[in-house]
Image (cartoon, rainbow, N blue to C red; front, side, top):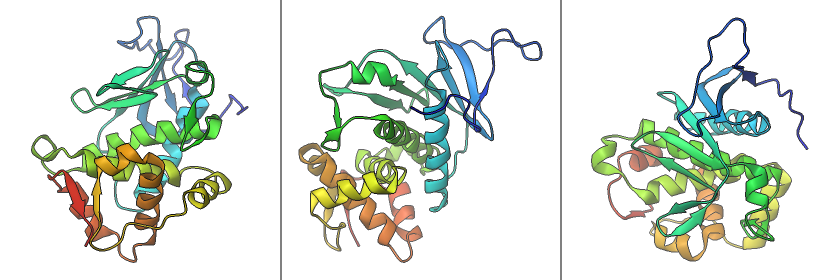
Length: 238
């Protein structure tokens, strides 16, 4: 279990003598929290037990995406919820809403209690996967804030490529290598078509191929620019 006194976390408490209380829209009883040294992220939660995970995920996410010149452009609101999310007809642990620019993520206990054996990338869901799940949604937010003409060029394939690559990228190296080894696949190659259809059939393979492709590019910025300007349903790998 992670320690709750995470060095990157600060709490805006309701009883603070220095700051006025900041209330969240959801849920009504939630308080607002922040992470030390990560001013871009605000957390709404009915208690502080998930703060360490959110702060750790934000720290790792921004470090990973910063390698590709993608940084938060505006504040990101994270809401901790206690129920599964209906996202396009399937149940999800988290989501990012581009209209409100808010991340919603289930609390770790609610994920673990959502069914008898929740999984992520064909592995038992645990604390490290929870950090990865938060990072996935934060990556959507950062990508959205850096995309060009997002209202016209919103593209799930480009979003999911970055989100899954980030999710693997923030995991502890042993767990990431275990996922990569188990999938027995390589990176996307020139001429491949990256699509959410492939992701729907094999999300683990999609994540592995995207992570390996991104991290093995000798000069990733032209491909990042392609993603940020992309408007089609699939991506043809140069």
